[in-house]
Length: 463
Image (cartoon, rainbow, N blue to C red):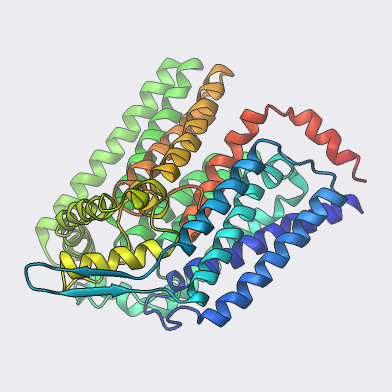
């Protein structure tokens, strides 16, 4: 009975994650934004429901599963939650005027709007604490729920097939050379949720010690790469491709301990494969109209060139963010508030920088943190990333080279992504939340230094 109850709390926490992500970034699930975002009344109801789920979850964890309170992490997250809520409520009416053309920008927040944002911050605190402590400490090695991983991967596969069927004509046009830049209209179009889901499945496979992990890894990473191509996410394409290459060579060089001859042979075969793939692609490109040439034209024109042409606008956005923050010392120290920051910054940017551009994000994870929570939030964020470095060093000391290499490589890739997109750890946005689960769940275990044997003993006592 104990393990059944334990499994139910595990599933309940994933439901909380799903509802919190839906509440915060519901528009990311749809390419054409048919929902237009929740109304404030609907968002309040969903937020209260999610908070009730959190209360029930923690009741089971602390009263039934005998999970103790973390005396360091809980005060930090509780204090940060309180500070972030206060930052939202002291945001008043803002007016921005462009001296050159007298363009006026005005932003004001209603009571319900601030209430919705505040409830989301409370949910953030509850979810992040669960990810970093209860969920991590007691569920990491609970292998009787590993079937959930396969369910998770199956869901990804089913909806991917559904998306391909619904968008078959568009995908067909890419290979036939008739693509007209109308865009893919997948129901689950946004690449960030899918990329995160794939990464969770990938790391979960490793964490749960599944056999044939390498097969999982390569299949998922190749899926990740091609989905990023069709959703025209240039940064993700480059980072993912680099990770595949580096990790593949790492696995090949691992044969040095067994056989130098095998290592040289596999390296030569792999290099020949890459060269052959490149030469074949070039030959078909020179021949003109064929599926490979048409596909590369799509990647070159509608993915790479399209993204690179907008890069300079991002540096302008970052400069504008700093200009806004330094106008008021309080904003620079405490930030502009969760969610309120993007409304204020978007109004400021439209009024004073570019009237024709509708801004939705700063396109930089660190700038986004600074806008939301100021220097205090940025220091907390950098400190949290410092724990990753600490755990990474511990993994190397323990000679867990394969684990440390993969975590280090993937973390560097996601940090690189943070400099180009609003990608960040320790948030309850879809992408950010899964990133947190992927990386902080294993490293907190290293920091807590709980032996797997002890954890197994804890689980045995549940029966």
